[in-house]
Length: 211
Image 1 (cartoon, helix red, strand yellow):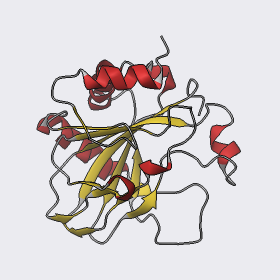
Image 2 (image 1 turned 180 degrees about the vertical axis):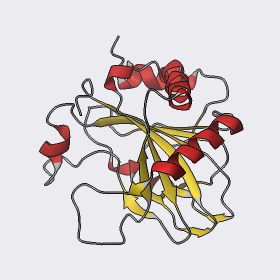
Image 3 (image 1 turned 120 degrees about the vertical axis):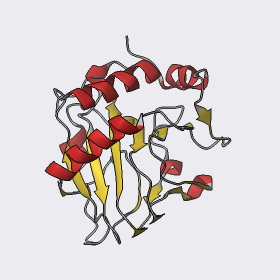
Image 4 (image 1 turned 30 degrees about the vertical axis):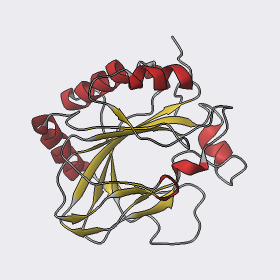
């Protein structure tokens, strides 16, 4: 079954422990302790083993815009399957609409400057990334560890800042009620001041994933 953005938000709003942020500008939720510490540790180890430099769409020429590393997580591995099952049970979105799970690693001094998760309609790389599966709809991101200093995720237009905690989930709708993209979801993976930050991210699409 394909759910609408409204039905997904309604489903999330009734989930015990999931808190909707009090803003009319976007559908944004958080839940502490979504992922158990032992599962988070397994995912950290996987990211550490297979990381590569992160990339961006619509490159703006700023070599320091995104300085993190990325890991493509194998869906056949047990920890990845566990997370996928948890997310499906939470949001109810057909897994066929989901991109493969990704991990990100931010060392000291690394960041991802303010950006949106959707691909900008009309942008240089829009057709490359959206021709087959459409644009991104929902984002689900889970912090996997504590960070000694820095590494928060800041939604400036929503006046919300979230700090890393083991297993904490953030999720948001990248779209508006009319189906257009929501610029208020602009967010900044702020610079890690001390330590290393690990997160995993799951993005869903408008159509079944055909990456």
